[in-house]
Image 1: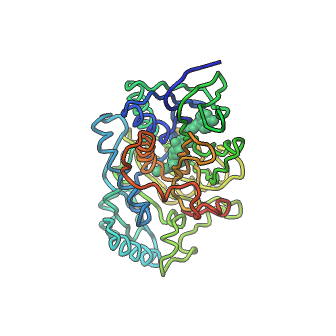
Image 2: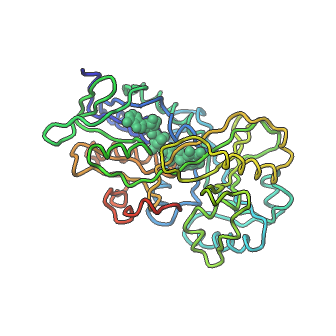
Image 3: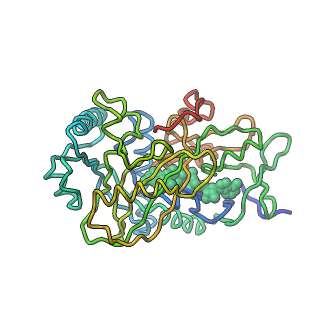
Length: 407
Ligand SMILES: Cc1cc2nc3c(=O)[nH]c(=O)nc-3n(C[C@H](O)[C@H](O)[C@H](O)COP(=O)(O)OP(=O)(O)OC[C@H]3O[C@@H](n4cnc5c(N)ncnc54)[C@H](O)[C@@H]3O)c2cc1C
């Protein structure tokens, strides 16, 4: 049975898939999106929304992030205030002299790489973020960082894509590829076939199902949780990263003064592989948004581990004891397709002509929409806004996906 047909079928309605559909439709392609559940069901709908420029490694990663960041100025014009876009920057606060030395080295390094960053003393830090604990002795500030509400962004862009002719089929899992003489000719879904000249697979962490088509996608499942609390009065217009978060980033770990012991807490449950990617922010409605318990489950299990929930709550109560009676509005986790070099995969699959793979996004807010733009240029035969060689599926850096736990 034929369900629909199109020039291009996009599998997955997350930020990567919807951005891809949007840019393709804007270039005149007839596009169908097949989404197994609903738009923004996956990581994109469960995300903290940070546009963290200061944590992007120098070189192509930073270039990609800058190009991705610039797109939000355009989306803001196009979509209006629908997705809580803020550009007030991010801070990373700290408590000890040992941590301060590491952050000083980090700020010096980043400034040398052209990333705007400052080191604030305790007074400046509390002036910028009055909710910080009196024990905080300083913070970094990165003015280039911004924030969105990713589920709102993806849904808003999906609506705009529909206005441009995209047909989004929710509750429509793609079961496999349609092929003719080994060339990909569309997808088979639960409700019928969708023939198409090209298929773009943007299935996030679930892209590993392409193994059934003979394609090994070198990603590992990383699980991140978030907790949405009630509304708070205190002013907070910046992202607040805690010191524990930094150990997730290779370029902090490579600094001369870095030691793991400075950036671990007894609240973390390293015996079960649960670490704290420590962040706090405030939504437009005033809700306190906290994260992120993080681990690497062996399976595609998107439930919050109890130990992770306890860790995040213990840390919140220690640092912000005034919030003991604040209500919990919701907790959830999402699954991220982690690659060995923390860079996405965007490539035409040689073994399956007609298939473009677009997955492996760990920082999908910055890298997702620009991926969609690049895919649309690739498929249209246009000049690419950025070279994509460093995003190739066969790049050597992807060889050891199973070992990866750091970005
Ligand atoms: C708690 C949390 C906090 C995060 N915070 C940030 C942050 O602050 N900044 C940042 O940049 N990133 C953050 N991330 C990571 C970010 O969410 C991801 O990088 C990004 O959402 C990946 O987008 P995606 O479109 O590739 O995947 P997803 O959003 O997971 O979308 C994939 C979609 O494909 C669909 N799908 C899969 N297989 C099929 C199939 N066979 N047929 C049809 N549909 C299919 C799924 O249902 C899903 O909707 C966070 C993630 C989590 C979980």
